[in-house]
Length: 170
Ligand code: SF4
Image 1 (cartoon, rainbow, N blue to C red):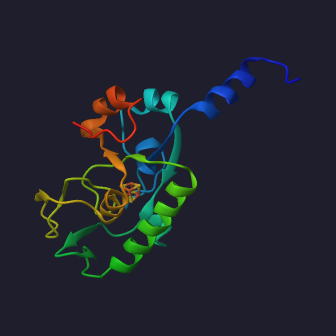
Image 2 (cartoon, rainbow, N blue to C red):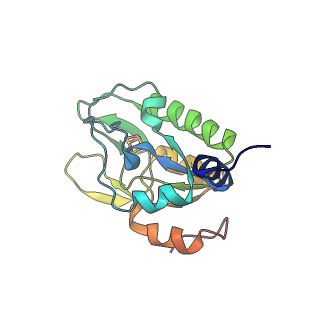
Image 3 (tube, rainbow, N blue to C red):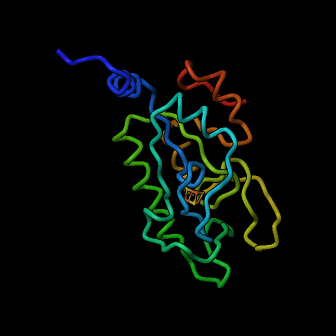
């Protein structure tokens, strides 16, 4: 019989938490293009509710960190020097999707405005800080595969929808 103590309980309750696919840079991984992570004020309560499956599609696609900033321009991903990075972004998105599937995730919390993880809003490809409607390569792939996607902007809906798998964010 397994003796019950605080650690046993933690392991058991952690196993019972639903899996949530997340952009790794929202939870402390310094994987952004400039080797930073994001100061995300809601990270603590989310970590308590979910088993986090952290992915960085750009790193999974073989891109180095740090790297040049990149944006989507007419369906290609280009960096600020004009290099076409589309292949690496697509490969990374596919690899990250495979991780998500292997972990049983159906819901994702993705970083805003990224050419990989951005959902509903991204930069326009001119490196001028101009935002347009659209999603990053990874977010597009997740959506195509039926994932429910939240971002830091819609994260409060994740709390209210937490027990309703497949429900749409606000
Ligand atoms: S690809 Fe996604 S996880 Fe990786 S740094 Fe960019 S926003 Fe964060």
